[in-house]
Length: 445
Image (cartoon, rainbow, N blue to C red; front, side, top):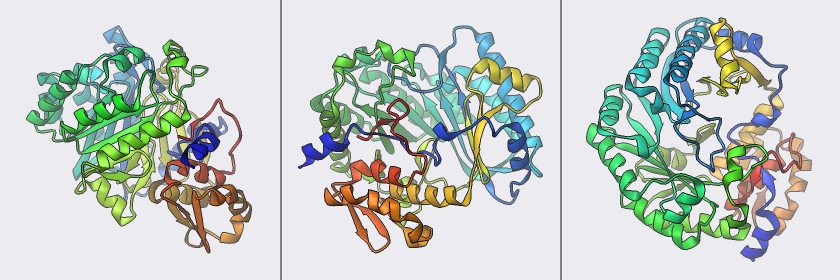
C-alpha cells in the first residue's frame, strides 16, 4: 500500500511551507514604503530575531538551490559587508525605539567568508543599533571544509554558541556527483575544533534524493554522523530544478532516485536517528530529547520559519542582505536578490525591499493552520478559525482520508502515522494560492 501511495502522491509539487503565503506569492506592489511603515509599528517591548544573509561561497556546489554566488575577490566581499552594516543602521533607524534581539542567525552561502574580523564588524554594528537579550542564541552556518582552529576560536570569542555544519552526504561517489568533496575526517575535525573552542551546540544538515545515493549509502552516512553526536540533524529532500538553478544542470538527472526510492531513503534516515534515541521533529528534523527543539515539539510550541523548524517564538524576523526575507506582523518583505542591485540601493541610503506581501486576516488564519499541520501534524479548525470557512478544503481532503493519510475528527484535521511524510499535501489544501505549477515547487516526498 505504501508503494502505491508514494507513486500516487510522492512526485506532486508542493511548497515546503517555511512561510504562508510562500515567497512565490510575493509582489512588487509591496516595497520600501511598506517596510518603513511596518518597522515604525513594531512594539519595542517585544524581542525580535535577526537573520544575516551572506550569499558568497568559494565554490558553488552542484545541488545548491540557495541565492549564492562564487566570490573570488575580497573587495567584493568587503563591499557587501559594508552594505550589510549600512542596512542594519538604516532598518533600525525606522523603528520607534531600539529593538531587542533574542535570536541571531548567520546563513548563506558561507558566512565565514567574511572572516572573523568581518563578522565582528557586523556584530559591532548590530550592538550599536539593537539590544542583545541575555543568553540569546547566536548561530552560524558553516562549511566544514573551511573550519580551522583559528576560525573556531574566533567564532567562540564573538559569542556564537550554535553552529550548523553542511554535511549533505558522506559517501565518496555521491560527493563527487554533487560537486562537494569533504571526507568524513574533515567533518569530524571541524566538529572537534568547534567543541574544543566552546561551541558545543552542533547541528548537521543532510540531504536525501541526491544523485548516486542509495538506501545503503545514506544509512552509512547516518552511522558516521551519529558517531559525532550532533544535537540536531536536519535532512532535506533535494529539489532538482535546473530550469531555475543553472548549477544544478551539472547534476546527472538520470542518476537521481525516483519518488519511491526517495521515500525509502527518508524513512531510512528517520529510522537511523529515532532508533538511536533522537526525537523526530516535524517532517525532517531530529534532536536529542533534552534539546530545546525537542522540548518545543513535545509542548506544542514548535514553529516553522525560513530557517526550518525552530523553538523561536518571536513573531518578528528582521533579515538583512541580498534576497533576505523579513517577517513582520504586517507582512513579508524581501530584499533585492541580485547582489549588485541590493548593494546599490543600500549605498544610496534606500531600503532594498524589492517585493513582499501584506497579510490579511484570512492569510493569518490559513498560516496558523498550515504551521500547525507542518509542526504538530494536526490542526483544530475550531481553535484556529471558523470551521465553516473551510468546507471546500475539507472536501478536498477526502482522497487523503480515503487513503488513510488523514483523519477528520469533528473539526480537527490530523495526519495518521502513514500520512506524516505527506503532510505538505494536506497543508497545500488550505493554501488559497495553490496552483499546479511544477516549476515552482519540489516533490512532496
